[in-house]
Length: 192
Image (cartoon, rainbow, N blue to C red; front, side, top):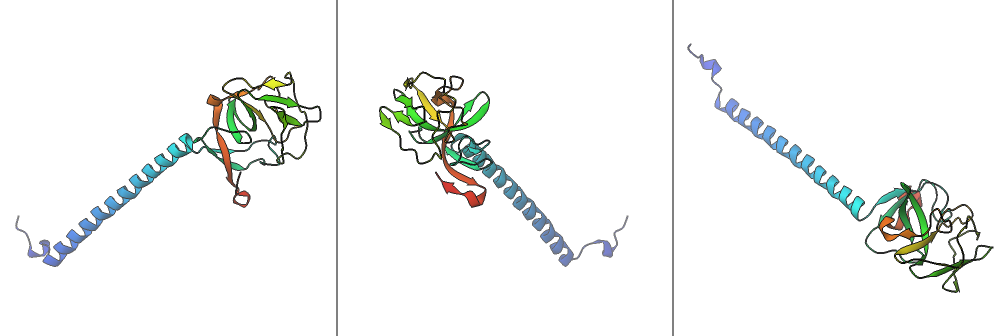
């Protein structure tokens, strides 16, 4: 079969086809580069949020007025909790948020009116709106066991916490992290 001269591409047509193929290959490389970068960034974000800076949502009112229902929190796993810190921890397949009142060896006492003493010193608690004994079925004064934290909610009248035998003191291995910021909704953004 003899080829017609019209079937053979001109130099300009050949150059245009080469440019088109190069652009197609360049576009495919750019798409692949973007997708692979997004995958890596997502993986890094998941690792950071899981291992170092967990993100949690407040459910309930046991930490009002400090934390409100449906606020989104940022926690840190970079340091051990200290007295006064708000911690997130696992309890019965739930995540609870409470304030650290005492650490290992501390002696906690609570009056009928809800005033709290740690090692004989009355705690200054500007973060609570009203003092209350709440649900307290432990023997007071109470000494915090080794490797444990005594925690209480800021809304003392309704919070179920270390004052209850059912919750008790929490172990360090159950702690998810120390809450350090409210990040959502944006109008509520603040550091704690």
